Length: 308
Ligand code: CP
Ligand code: NVA
Image 1 (cartoon, rainbow, N blue to C red):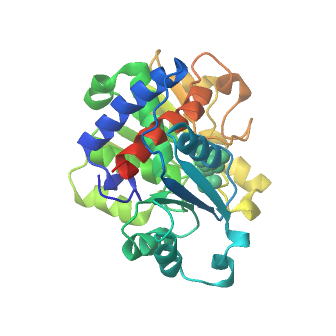
Image 2: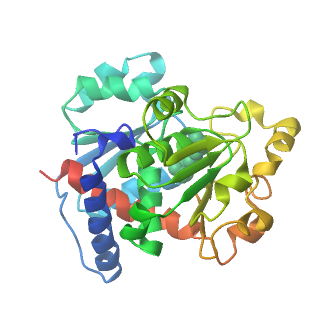
């Protein structure tokens, strides 16, 4: 793995499979009470320029469980707020800490940090991508179906907004090669550069369209996300809800999926918008396992990046 995880494409297939193996061990052994002090003496700084519950908690608890320390830096109380550049901030922080997790708006900000420093930069969500979440989601798929099924024929569907989650799913499919079907409303497609790469390359295992029923048909994983991402709050309008309504993950849509299909959502969810409570709390949902898995998968990631 390169020192930074700015998108899923910073990880090779081999490294991702190693993450699943290590996360499986960490999950089992931590539950059994075995300590893993592999990051003793290491510090992770965590910058949040957007809200977070899961990312903040899972990284902080993860560092603690690995014997290290995490420091939360709210952007509103740091000099970033007053215009200090991301590059200068990273250069200074690298004199104190062993890794930086950042949640911010522009992908270029995490790129600037990575270019300015040799300590690992981990993208904890940008407008463009959410790699730690999709690595976790893949781990959750592997827990349920095994790695062979994911890599061989495990069709994954994503329906809803073509946002950071959709982009990271595309990147994961580019690295691992599993069949991915994305359906978004017109005008809400994933990142244009990614779409261009799919069209230009021979990536027939990835389909991007506007038909949620076609996307979900026979999928073993049905995945969705909020229709209004952080920073777009002004778009939470009645018209948008109506436009997105055909993309709701509900009982009727789930009936088209494979009979063993599981449902994922990175959370936070807006119940009765992108997903019904019936599905979210139903037997096919792995949404809360998925939330727990942030902890285990990211501990494996922190070890890969920082245990040297
Ligand atoms: N899924 C996710 O990243 O959750 P938070 O926004 O709570 O960190
Ligand atoms: N697409 C969502 C993901 C939240 C974890 C957002 O960016 O708000």
